[in-house]
Image (cartoon, rainbow, N blue to C red; front, side, top):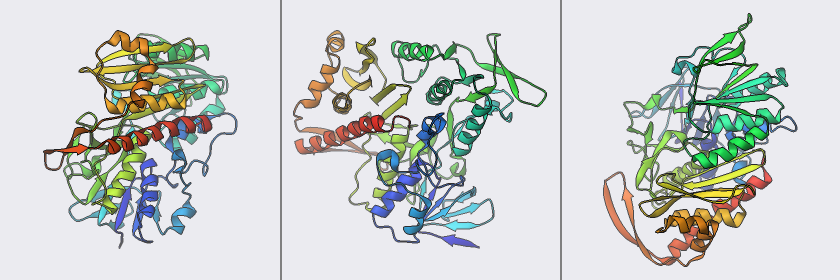
Length: 480
């Protein structure tokens, strides 16, 4: 017994919602599209889970943050899917996928066939047991990857008001959860092995600013060590955390944010994998031409840097999903995915944006005491990355434009003195016609095509609109 669809989206996260909206805009017919998700709810904006969902007052709850409100688009409630003839197969785990036969088998034994499969399986949170530490099953040890995790975390938070929380991990989840816990008047200690927070992105100087800000809010940092074990009470709840440096921290709540792993297991041996994810070309198409992959699970060519990357951020999930659907529905009209890596975060009263790549030498600028500062990254004599905290709409647009252009930089000291003026000046210069390389990963060929001035201008307008919307949206919906 089974069902058949023209298009099947496997996974119910952010990318699935944005893909569904794009399918309807590209003319998908009722009954042609199906979304299969292990979660019992329609796709929603995951960033809300570590921000608005954890607020003590007027917390965000569904249906308020169903996709695609995160990009100021329609809010896709279950009613919306029904009205558009899109089948939601929720609370359903897919047991196996046969890419050659174009069939999926669910855990309940149902077979679902497709003509085109869009993989949006995302990633799972790494468990403590994968690091040799037992205790994940304790009721006050929490992860934060989906709505069930968020509900569990809120329940524990409410039971330990003014208690002690230990957050394991100094990355995105750790930093955002620590902020939310502090807002809830819980005593927070962040523990991570690196020398500073957000080590994959921040320089030591940038990190020191955020660490000091967090400390002013009561958050403590324990750096350069890791969790080794827990102490449990008679009911099995964690009451203390043991660290490798020999110290012990009291804990009424533990939040684990030690990274993620892409959900690729269903496709191992069937599709080409790279960078820990499923390798796709500029159309988001996998090694099987009937299968596409988007979001955290996809490793795609980043044209700006001429190499394949796998990016873990909601902006990439949204845009890659829309591009894949365009490539599926209008293959002759859609080009290669031309994505400028973009990351952002909003915690407490802070808001930063980053564009490009943090390789090469970092050049800091701005006034840290005023809360407006940033950095440029220079590699091989060109600007490749830009970071800005506390910027205006124009300033965020400027660093996005400048990074996309990769202008040459000769004097790093002068660049530091110019600061934001460098990006503002570069972004306003008329752009001449320049040749660019367009790489086709499916064939390995490299073709040179001219780009006329209006093409460059159009690209800059798009980049500016992204930065401008991010700024506006951050001001309007800071709690997300």
